Image (tube, rainbow, N blue to C red; front, top):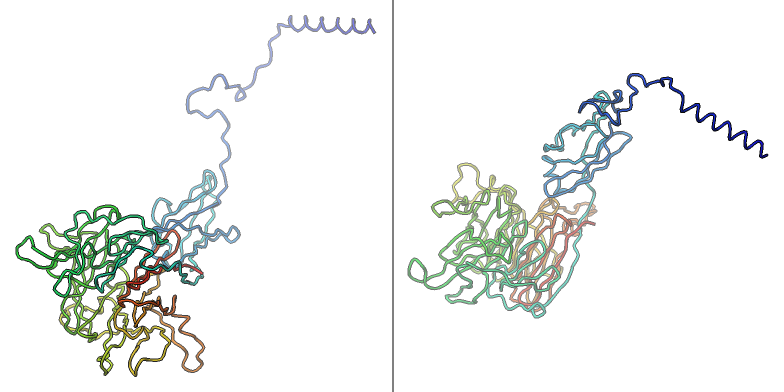
Length: 525
């Protein structure tokens, strides 16, 4: 063993000396095999053989931004199609939508995602993903599919005036409106969250006056006369000042303000002054863009004329201080009750051609009788129909109107009472709005001693089949069947609506003065 170890060690020593003493030149790498780690060569030069270009051309994900909405389409990798499922209120934005995509590495896509795409065109849109090699391509056919849904109404809460700390509303006009999508205000300037908790007081900095005037006297101080909100929840309210006027003398001036910067910031004047207290104001559209402001004239003549002011691009006044709105004066030929207790217009959008609804304090005289009757609600078409080119505004156009029906179920109080089933006392309010592209109204009506709220369709009204009675119109036409709100009241109910596109929920607040405030949500089933 010892001899073997010595022999191996000797061989190792001989090998070591043989290696160190080898002076023969060693083989060198050939062209293209040099180690460039220490000598990168000229900057920008490729040091590797040209790699083959990718043939991958796959669309891995897509997100669509359509107006305020974000949609996640379904990609079918088998038949290479993309389905965009949309709600009705999303469709109008799909004609100029933008996309964000994830595609195969080094691939490209057309049309250009940085540019708006019209997904509503006939035949649909084709997105083409082209591989790096420029030869391999995959075409994805994009098509639209209306989502299947139905709406429902849920009652969120009901609180008495005392619980909310509200006082008596001094006049018949609307005393509630949203101030954003998460808060509403009452005419006494208190602001509440969607659960009915007080969060603050409306900022009225710069407002000329806060009085309610009627019957020759000031009926209330520090109160808004009439309230509404635009489609984004921006508060618009009418104020009045009674007393000495800047131009001399005494009287009543009305002005309209919008809280475009938030309810806790000073408002902006959008109209006025008008030399009397205006009534039954409403607003529709976007007060920072295109919108409609309307209110009733002070006269009680029949037919009743209304002021309708159509604004464009958020411009309120001209350089000379005059109103920048275009004025219309539609007349509604309904006698109204007791010298016009009330009549109000409410538009669905900021475009007058989208139509409007009239709430009218229906007179029994219109039905050939005397005394009270009920509230009535009529749907009209757009202004192109109401005011055809060359029409005289003093004329009353012979256009179609649709009288809506409520669902008060008790026996008629007499042969003509409750003609349209909205109670038997002719005071109320209407709020027209769109929910998922469908026209609805909130019909507020009254009786003694209670009020009623109905949320119903204002288009595509479903009627029972006269022969088979297969369709129950009470289910088809109503989100909220006519619902009674008990308690003694002044019978001047009103409501407000705002839609939250982030949640898809429509929020409703309803006032049965001076007793209760109710909150409802409209949402998908």
